[in-house]
Image (cartoon, rainbow, N blue to C red; front, side):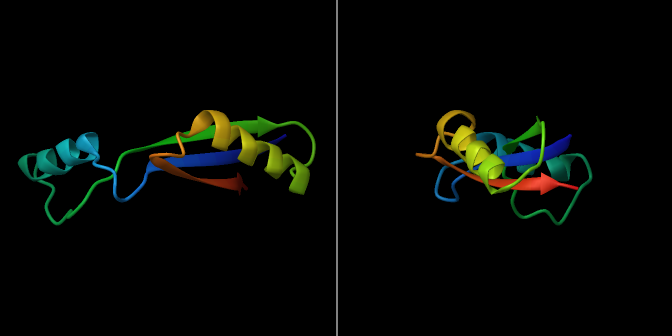
Length: 81
């Protein structure tokens, strides 16, 4: 079985309150030098059979229609080796 990873992130122009909360907390916890934090989601899909162009196209469709809200989120699909 192969693993395909779909990473979903808010588009850069969309406000990320959770990322901002983490960014504000870091200095209080002693972590300096972080200028921005963006929060996202990661999905790991175990794929039966080869991960060919057809399988990647199906996973792209899954991400586009189910895993990500493409109005406010971008996503990437990659094979995890």
